[in-house]
Length: 182
Image (tube, rainbow, N blue to C red; front, side, top):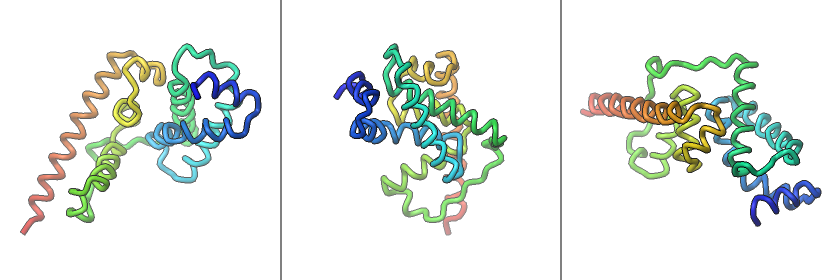
């Protein structure tokens, strides 16, 4: 089912279409919110609020962009507004020391992905957001511009800077691990 048909069915009150919309875009909403809000209960509540807003505002969506872009925009702005209200403080990356509990598990693919996500979580909100949209969600630069409201040059710059910061963190971690070896 294409996006327009899904939206039409949701607007007509179809419960199955609502469930389909949630299952199709739940991961995107969770990713957008998790990049800004760290508390599990706050994230869960915020995700629910985002889907309520999506259902309330769906009739105003004009399909000028992809539905996923519109949904990501709602989730991103909701997360930023929540962070402002709660006065969530973003910690500078240079102040964080990351310790690896089980060095052997990092070599496994699943654990490596979790490790990388933990590293990404250490980045400033804007860096986490653009990396998540670009690499995890596969958004193009123009789509990221639509979601975040940042100029395209800023998006590209943030992706570049985030990659450099991640590289630096990984290199520092590797040095720490080598120092721990007998």
